[in-house]
Image (cartoon, rainbow, N blue to C red; front, side):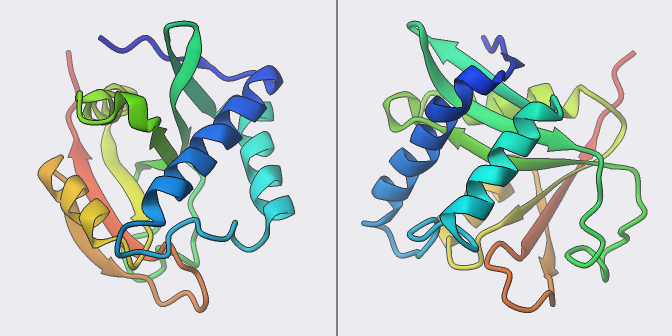
Length: 168
């Protein structure tokens, strides 16, 4: 069972560690995802810290260590979703990362379900274009492939959404 808590600045090194752990694992896959921080390390780190400071980032701990993270926002990246109903009510997932030690146990799916319970509308995620295994993962999680963004130079432009179910 998932018990996410809001991340604090003290979690920043662990979150970066999750991303770098995933990047090392992805290096052996047929994708270039996260092989270089996008667009560079300083900008990536600023985005991660910004999510923490804005209270948008959550972490899951297991055994006293950060095992997973996700950032959630309602802020639309209008240029990214321009052709795909950018004004539809939606919650956007960013940097959903599960440490490889915890992979394959459903933690990512639990985090997605947890996020979905946070509001009505669409649950959206943009996924690295070359990571077809990740595309298939989101399809298995009930997401639909919406299309590719035409935002020039953006590597995470494969767009997916899932209709959120309102409970109650």
